[in-house]
Amino acid sequence: MENKQKKEIKQKKKNKMSVGKTIAIGAGVAALGAGAYYFLGPNAKKNQAKAKIWMTKMEKEVVQKMRTIEDVSEPIYHQIVEGLAQNYSKQYQEHAPQIKAFAEHLKNARKGFEKKAKKKKI
Image (cartoon, rainbow, N blue to C red; front, side, top):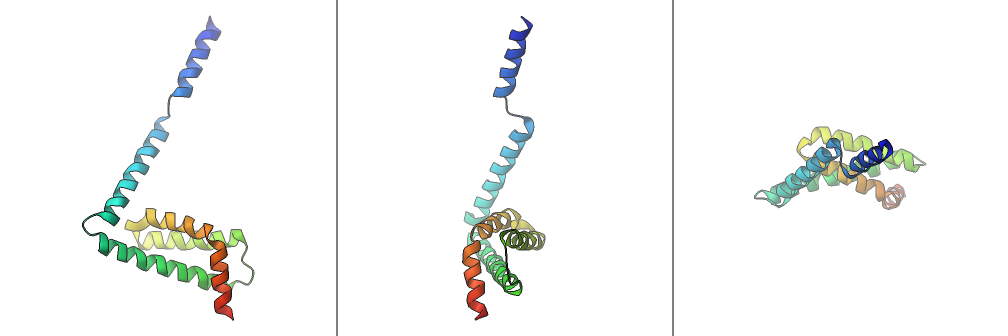
């Protein structure tokens, strides 16, 4: 009888989502909504222009730092991008979630930045 009760309790625990996960999902949805309003709301053009400025600056800084280092491995590249993302998140606090997403994009686009850095060296 006890084994049956224990199995039922385990099954109930499996079906429930923890409070922390629920809060994290809720916060993610709220951030997504805020970001959408920020970029698509009444001041969308102004906010998009600001974002374009820091995105361009961040890309240029990544290329500059890659030029100073001869052999850029993937971990070093990720450190460069993460460091810049932290600096930009402090500087542009209202864009912090977008900066984090853009940093992930930059990490995935490493090959393209290596080509840019090599082109400018010649």
